[in-house]
Each structure stands twice: as structure tokens, then as C-alpha cells.
Image 1 (cartoon, helix red, strand yellow):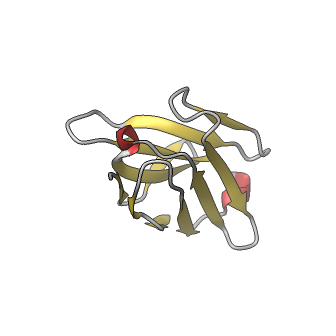
Image 2 (cartoon, rainbow, N blue to C red; image 1 turned 30 degrees about the vertical axis):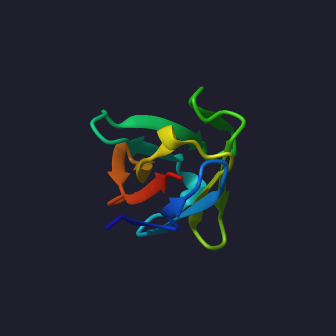
Image 3 (tube, helix red, strand yellow; image 1 turned 90 degrees about the vertical axis):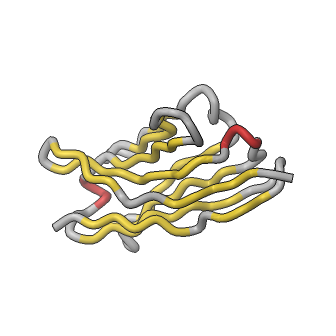
Length: 115
């Protein structure tokens, strides 16, 4: 059974940084695409970033140049480094992976950007 557990969220001031982690079990990230999405207060869930099994990355325009997605195949863990955070980045962040054409989600973790 695939399980994803996010960690590393919290509160930070505008301009600050956080690194989210996504620990996977029941699957191997190195053979899957994995990514991050987020849902801000009163907003729909939106896609943030993806890293393919081949290591290619892509980002939503709203985070491009500020966020970096990566993966540690040994630890079977994905990461989202978030720099230059803005209040509009406040959201619950979810990691996900795709295995056998099915998408699996973590439970999410809250990131709050506020002064």
C-alpha cells in the first residue's frame, strides 16, 4: 500500500524559506513521477511542481524561480525547497505520486507565510 507523509511545514515570515519533505512507503519514487500541489484558504487545489522518473522538473508560473523540487532515491523521499516565500504561498501542501496510472496523495501539511 502506497503511503506518503509530508513534513517540514510551519510558519515563516515573507521572504523566508522552508523545505518540505515527502517520505514514501509502498512504492519507489525513482520509478514514479512525484509532485506537489497546494490548496490555499478559500481556493481550489492547484498544481505546484513535478519531477519525472527521469529527473525532469516543471513548475507552476507562480512559483517558478523560487521553488525547487528534488528527490532522494536512496531515502525514497521527495522535497520541495521554497524560497522567497510570499503571503499568497500560504496553503496546505500535498505531495503525490503516480503508480500504475493511479494517483496517491499525502494528507497535507500547512505552510503559513505571515508577518
